[in-house]
Length: 580
Ligand code: DGT
Ligand code: CA
Ligand code: CA
Ligand code: ZN
Image (cartoon, rainbow, N blue to C red; front, side, top):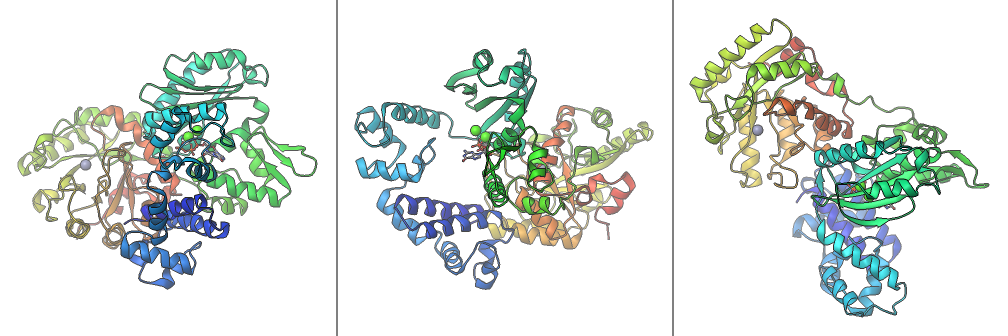
């Protein structure tokens, strides 16, 4: 049971209470607790027996502490179970439809015991909802469309998939005379690991109000469109090939900043920001920041003007999750976040010696083109036979080859010999210590037996990092986004031991991995862990994917000083765990 799951149970209970017509104070306290569970770095499962510790978390009061304890002890929440028993488990999925809030769900339940998306679709088709309040022909059409959309694209999409689509359509849009600027907003701009849908803003003379007609038609003619969801005066929503939804909005440049701010979100950030605006006598919308009394516009054209009028510094989108950034910006106290340009090298990549596509020299040349001063070559070890993993003998030869390439580079780049050595099921490493001792960068990773229990996996990894030659713990959760869940492991315990031993934890920048997540990265920093960010490239073409890792580090508020591979080559070698 992890924090995210606990947050979801609390959030669902709030939704169910609202559908049930419950007390609004009570509903809010569940929502606040859900948010707290989502955001805290305290491992709630471990902290649960200690009530005082739970009460220290902002947003958790006495009754919510008791609820958290109930969740940990029983795996569930009695109130949620009771409500679900009354209404059915399918009810919550209704909330996933557009313009469907708890009030409408309650109405549908009362009217026809509608308790799932399937039941709703059936009721609409059978004409059973006609005559209900707020269920006119238009609304029913909208619901029908929403159901189709939901069924087609329940899933989320990886950030690199969304970004590639954003690039493609941006290039198309910018060809239209009078569209001058296209910016992704929403979760993509905030650098989230996955996006639900892609929000794109466009501006220029062709996007001025009442003149958008031709531009809207042009958007709707985008060759990548699978089907159009909605076409309005300044907005076109559609699906592209793989089911990803795009919302393209055309906006006048006079209100572009307000729109960009609004549609970048997150929702939680915007809620807090609007509250701050209200307290200052302003109202904040997707069109402008305006005075409450006479509605005169205070700022609208740029985000900087809006934040500045609210007494704040502009902040990078990656920070906008309502995790303290509003307060920090108001105190003019925002941290300097790490940038791609801070990195001096990449410490995890594969070559043709195991399952990579390129030679050592090719990787080195490509890294020079990235502006790096060093790389480590870290091929797989023998247990991963299907990757051509190295045994002791081949590993020693490989070290020689790497050193040879390093010499031939004549200082243009340093090439460090390394290995990604497998952590076997019992925590023993897959190569002999004498061989590991000759490598500069030993990354230890789990690639097998993901199904071990939490205790087994924790012990396995703890045992592995006790080996004095391990410098880096590779992709620490084993997750593959949208494909494979992280394996069960006590992350706090592992990170704490890494910090004690001086083992660096890897943030794996490959967009299908991106582990650690932002919460665990914050925890790693709190615990004093060294952190490295690597692409785990198997080809020269993926060295540039470092960008995704950088964005995740920024979402965790990390600066260049928190990441080892911002150091110069010699300083980096000195900062890696010293061999004792
Ligand atoms: P996603 O698409 O699930 O990955 O996440 P977002 O953050 O892109 O969410 P989305 O597409 O629903 O909305 C885009 C932004 O619009 C969101 O980040 C914040 C802004 N927004 C502000 N107020 C609201 C609101 O009341 N509802 C929604 N849906 N969005 C809002
Ligand atoms: Ca979105
Ligand atoms: Ca959207
Ligand atoms: Zn690996």
